[in-house]
Image (cartoon, rainbow, N blue to C red; front, top):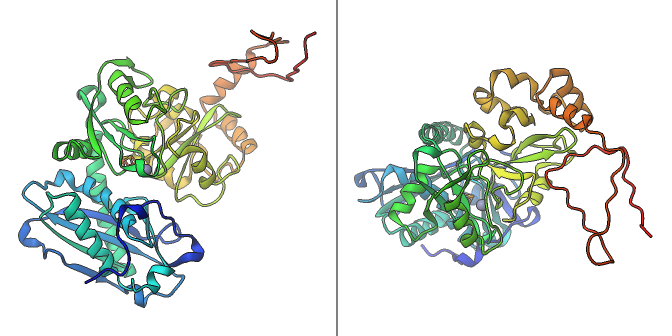
Length: 443
Ligand code: SF4
Ligand code: ZN
């Protein structure tokens, strides 16, 4: 079966715009979608087989959006269940090697498109995609000896598949939740996303799952063991420099090496000063809201504007790309369940706004006394309403406003420093409430 389009790493960064797409599979407008890898016994796999359950490309209507699941089953002497998540994450890369096929995100959130051009060139069945995946998996991960792929487009079947898959994702995450940074001496790194964001890499600890939400500490360890020179590698954690911010000498060393010198240090549990960088596949964004001195969160599937008056996509442009951007952090929703969740910034005590669907997902991890003090889109859609809500509910950040307002600076004059021709104003860790700022030329 000869694939009618090119399959190579050069197509990886390719995006398919709405006007150019033949069909969309999964994505924000479709409720059921997902991908999963499972390890099987060799006898349970028909090696090289591709199945399509539901209508194939040639039966789907041009311009339509459809439910979609990708199910990959693998076997091999050295393929253990521990590797499932890591193999699963590669689905993203390998799908993107296929000319005219785009794959975004992971787990229950995948978003794929086939281009008109590739369809016209004869890419009229998912079997070609399955073929490409099988070839790439075997070539890049030789431990995989047998592999079969099933695509599902039948709505009911996708729904059932995703329901089961969610239980498996949850079991993986629960396992990592039981462990903490203090109990291990090695963290793990991932550089898979450097093809999109060359200065970004993820640091994965037991208290901090990767920002895409698909690789936890156990997954990182399993991957680094089978392929230590691959995209997942061990990071000896070194000395604990700052317990609250989560700063480790071993992490900083690797940050310098792996960020092409762009970044010097990471605070693993803060969005201020030296936050972890973000590529583009974060499940959610934590963002600072200066007007209330609090932190908000928005996830990828949130439709509409956040309390800042801009949608997820605008914040994503600000956050992603591998730069350290103070006040913005790409993160997995699972990280909100970590006992170290933004602990340096006050953790849940600083959280003021998040979409209702995220709040419902993590409700058990929000301290009971804060649950009704954190606003959702139903309580506030702009800053004024948010302020009113936080005040009325007695949110802990309101105490911070009082502290700030209590500082009175009648007038602050900044003298020119150094050579004539300019001034440099550095306000570090300052919170100043000023009625008016007047800049005058000094004669
Ligand atoms: Fe790896 Fe991080 Fe990219 Fe996930 S987001 S694939 S952990 S680099
Ligand atoms: Zn990424």
